[in-house]
Image (cartoon, rainbow, N blue to C red):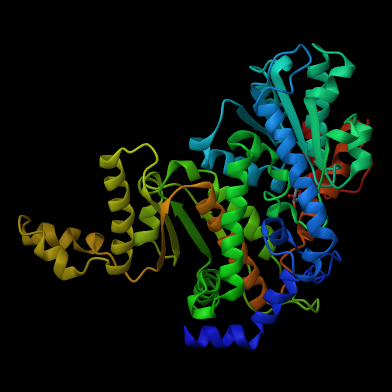
Length: 480
Ligand SMILES: O=P(O)(O)OC[C@H]1O[C@](O)(CO)[C@@H](O)[C@@H]1O
């Protein structure tokens, strides 16, 4: 650990952290600051946070509060005068995964509104969500920082057409709101200016659930709980800013992960929350981690000659134990595990809770200790020598498999906020050590561009763009 702390000192991590929180343009390839932390800051004194930005944040939070409370209390109603019962969040990537994960995670705190999420450009996904909805009582929140994302715009157009089969154009202003930095495009879509919630270029998509992108969260659990989520994240920000590295949870987790990734050759990390409420957490984390640190150029533009972004995957426990834990225990790959558990159950089924947590602790113990030949022999007295010899190699567990254990008191909005901010900071620390830019995502652009070309080819009589033989024949096959 001391060597790792020295590594953090060598790259001047402390300075990097300060630069991020003060709003320096650390996202150099997009020429932007990275200030999602300002959204949950109570301090008005930090450079940029103290100025124009904190005023914008306060004004926008008030707008969210007023809007959310009007919908929840039924003061604001649908076009036929009925209260809203359902909310559909239309967005993808960071405009979907964060809100969807938190809405599910905090389901225990939800009110009467039913939240739905449409993300994929797959028309069947859209239909499956809208088919049971009543346009008179459904609110649509279009979330797109850019308001140009193909999936979100296509889905919003389809949903607006479906809505207009039952309602007239004037009803759109009551039922459609948008979250975007691109006010012009949102207005062109038909959203009234008053119904557009601003977003800022200093909030990255995958770090945006704390902003207006979190409207679906605030609608689901109420504004007060949404604030508690922000408070929890704010407390973790202060911890990250102030604690010396050996006591700094995000720093320690990041360094341990660098150790496994860069020094022991671990290819991936797995995250296992022992609560069904966090079933979408691995998906959310995949975007946060892999879109941020999946880079092979350093900050000078040179190709790195070391490993960067870890592959993250996971599922809830105990389900995962019955699915892929075999490979973690006895496979050939080193896979560090993060266990996340909560001491108190929300509904009080103590028998379940004791069993749930004992499974989590047992997995960590088993991975660490393993099972020796002697132990297998000891517990196999009932077997003949021949039978024992046959089975012995398969019953041995090598052990020495690393795990982190995050044991939290209770799943509350505040604790969840702290947990999410913890992982955000872990991502930053690792990116900083690897000397890469964590806050851009140029790697998603090529696919978008080529999909545009292929769409043109699919729609035209002839294949017009240049393709390799494989792509060309696949386009042909699809068209036939
Ligand atoms: O909010 P937008 O602009 O629609 O973008 C959605 C997502 O698309 C991405 O840009 C990747 O394609 C993500 O970073 C982002 O979260």
